[in-house]
Length: 464
Ligand SMILES: CC(C)(COP(=O)(O)OP(=O)(O)OC[C@H]1O[C@@H](n2cnc3c(N)ncnc32)[C@H](O)[C@@H]1OP(=O)(O)O)[C@@H](O)C(=O)NCCC(=O)NCCS
Image (cartoon, rainbow, N blue to C red; front, side, top):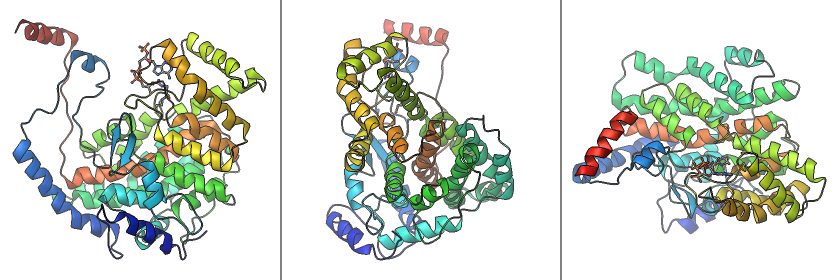
């Protein structure tokens, strides 16, 4: 399953799509291609602002100010847009579409995350050759500095893997080309180039950090070397210790793609962007985003789901009937807890990322008891949540499925799951940081009021 001779399928897929979208041509390297595209985007944004800069694009209610700013338009995020009913589109493409058009390895069926990175950064589907050159570039930059290895080796096994992940990323700041260039007074127009270098270096090193944490906490502490001739997900699977399982490698490809980007307002994306807007380096910005991903209402929900499923399985003693599951769901709700893996701040239907994982499970593990349990919960939970009447979205999200896929292949340590999500999320938020610097976005600084000030404001508005 190496990279050799896989061009035919991806070229065919590329041709099938080229009627509607632009494609990268030849073997242009990603940084050069971005540099070619950037001036066009800069003038597009400039024109848009000069024509419509004062157009009102929405209104804000007091409830939104107190309600986590749901639905307020105020961010720019080029990589993806999330429709409440349709789900995510990466640069205009749904998950089934990216599964179809992005390059794959020979014999593989899942898209390569490095190809998705290219798509998110440029808006173009890369050729197989372009993807391969990016994979090689990432592999060549994967080595960790010694102080980062030492630091991770000294973390206690009791420290949550996400806290270790954040420490590792922060410690890599020593490598920041952006920070060095800034200190040397580089001009604003050049910022994106250093942000690009940091982002590629970071993306390249994340699997080694993640694998080191996994192997230190749960295994023998040894991490396999990166092979420059294979793709990113295969190297990552090997470093984790699952490289001999072709299905697990395919799962990693799919997993990294579908967890990458979910527009700009979610906690990890927004935090990375916000911290980046202060011109903190990509290392510090991503680490901040990862601290947000570690929260149970965000990425850590995948760990919570697994813990909840394991307790449910224990209590149900093999009886996965709808009646028993329904009772268990009510028990969870009545104890004041949420049903983990259900609900969403934006989505109002089943998450297509859930469906992509369900398709994968149907293909590879349809008789697995934990998959059957997750499937039956899917039949019961929406009805229960509707009956409870609190959540605006009674349907499952991405986190409700991912854990059992990993369990099936033997990656059973659920406290590590959010780290996998974190590696994937870097594929979405790092292109956004490069674009932020390319388009010269300013420091982010929305307005806040105290309750007293809001009172004054709404009372004076009510009189008008
Ligand atoms: C994702 C999540 C944080 C979105 O929150 P939100 O935008 O505030 O959601 P809603 O507007 O639908 O919330 C309204 C009410 O329904 C509740 N609710 C939302 N999802 C729920 C769930 N899965 N189970 C039980 N109650 C839920 C909320 O806690 C809130 O209750 P409150 O009025 O007592 O505070 C929420 O759905 C949740 O906690 N889900 C479980 C955790 C999870 O899966 N997170 C991963 C998301 S990808």
